[in-house]
Amino acid sequence: MYFSIIIPVYNRPQEVDELLESLCKQSYTNFETLIIEDGSDKSCKNIVDKYIDRLNIRYYYKENSGQGFSRNYGFERAEGDYFVVFDSDCIIPPHYFETVNRFLLEHPVDAYGGPDRAHPDFTPVQKAISYAMTSPLSTGGTRGNKKHVGIFHPRSFNMGISCEVYEQTGGYRITRMGEDIEFSIRIIESGFSTALIENAFVYHKRRSNMIQFFKQLHFFGRARINISRFYPNKVKFIHFLPALFTLGIIFFFSLPFWNLSLFKLLSVPFLAFIALILFHASYKNKSLNIGILSVVAVFTQLTAYGIGFLQELWTKTRK
Image (cartoon, rainbow, N blue to C red; front, side, top):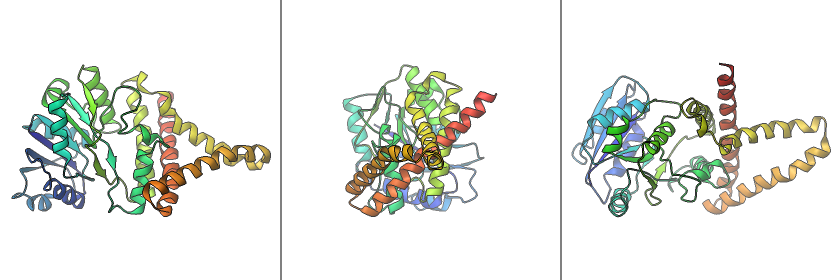
């Protein structure tokens, strides 16, 4: 199996360095790497040049068009049997392509995805954010979970498609605001098979502080409504949960001014949720500090997504 790795990059040369270094350590090496510089001001060309003798790598610079169309740019130039998409802020464990190759030989599918994890060297904040995005106690539990409801939808931070999938679908139709969700839906509706490869995980850095994380999840919330413009029936009840949580938080903290007894009653499930996150995250990461940060990260995740979701929903209904 020959793989083509497509990595769109925008002003993140240091992340590319770490990602390429991890690709040099792969136990399965039958792949090429295409770096697509999407109109960056901070070029990673000098970083890529460091790996010319260590990887089968090609560098392309193009005008800024967003990550979806930058991936298409890479697909057009890829030569592999499978096109593998990574975000530039990922680190790939050494067994990744060996795991994927073995799975695809035993269980041929047209598209696959893998989960993400926190690397041991990540900062406490990054580990807390990773917990929020992958925990069963938040909406992140639907990502990379074999027990999730319905057909598995790969996500572009860690996914692969056969060259036939690209040839038939034409790749990404939109370049931002939920482009990976739209593409996954279209892959499945075109009759292609998908699968989660549980051990094909990546270490995903995401954002390094809560403000950046809030902005990212706010955008994700808006993106879910944007997808409904293409697929109205793809907004499920689960997608409304962060918005309901956000409205609940607003209602909860407005209660003391007019109904103290109801505030005390509702405090029980609210505090129980906090305690559950604190215990689970602390136990999973063997750190009370990360547990506390995880509480902040989960609340940031849910409220940011909820606000973005509600704002975009309001904008859509007014048009």
